[in-house]
Length: 267
Figure (cartoon, rainbow, N blue to C red):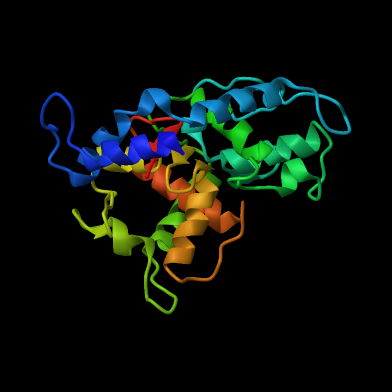
């Protein structure tokens, strides 16, 4: 609780040591926020995820060290910024969270009903194993450029489907992702919204996992997609569905070349 008070206080103040160079209100707010990045609580989640990644678990009592995230079994560095991507062994495009679950099932023997797989998101009472592992794997791409592959036809089709979904307006509010992320300097309450046309803004916006100060836990890309659909009053989107992966594929492609901050710290 004390750390949350410190963070809120810093956000209310100005940047120490001079004005923010950027004229983007979204990036200005981020610079204030990142003053506290050295104390990002997501580091605790990352450390737990490292332990879970290397620990023999499940009915088969093996670790996740042979999981292939696209660059070869056990290769983590740079893997996350090159996802979503097509995997031959599943015949589909997968994001990191879906791939971790696949490996937990195939390598470790967990089933869909087992808690390590069934619990997709953390709460303030209990952290999900999946979120911890996801945070650890993603952190191995910190500071690298977003560079999702577009070589396979399914990668291109998934990205294109994500673009359609991103621009599709629906629901009782007639909202789409584009309603919030197409025009600069829009905001919801006190939060300025990032736009896809500004690479620096967007590369930070899609930097998940991130510790959400308002939630008190680490959140993931899939959680953010679900949250956006809820806020748009559109029909709920299923975790790991082709639709959710398509949206993540599109937004990652829009951030191409921008620097990923992993794990991030967000309001």
